[in-house]
View 1 (tube, rainbow, N blue to C red):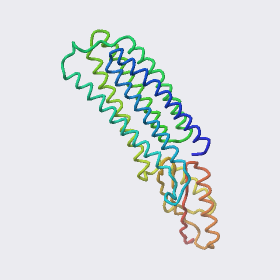
View 2: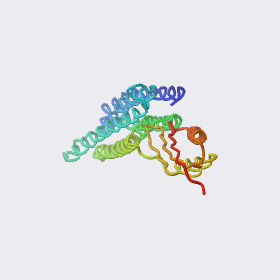
View 3: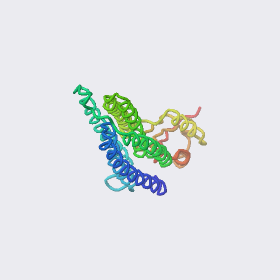
Length: 294
């Protein structure tokens, strides 16, 4: 991630922290004084947004540190670590909200559940609008900077918007004479949050376990390599994700009658071509196999 992209990521995370802090306070106030368990749960979800955004900010900062003796290949995977921690926070938050909703429903004291006030309903509408806006803004920044942690933060905002939709439905239903719907909304919020947490976890783990890149990208690399002058064929082409960057290992076939210097120049051409044409490639290792020409 370049210096400009890092600055953009830091700006977005700072805006997220401020927005989530203000929204959390407003939703908690509305939930308590509006007597809505769903809105209190929604506020807790926004609070987890504040914590997760701080984690994202730390992860992005660490991922952009220069290689050192302990990490000669760089620190890109710290972004994935941040995403995994974020997914765990989401999962725990969602589970806690769901358990609270189930407990209220199992109690059977539906008549004793307080009817949410108009303030809680207004808070849900405000939250939906603000969080959906933050989702699109953060998603744009994540795509521009190619940051997995920032993309995870964007989907965290989207999950908060979804949970606020659930809150709105529950609060509206409760005000219409069905108080139990406020607790049902908590369970819906729980399921949405857990789904997002699992998706974030799977993507982050894939980037931490040397997962290969998409087939279409590999096919494009193959075409690019074969287009290099004096490359006769490709014996092996492997890729692996390292955070949000790509490492490439390729064995090319070259005329066996070429001198070592000539073969080396062909390998250099392939190396430079791959790193130039595919911006996410951090390093390309090229091995030359001699081919006997008939």
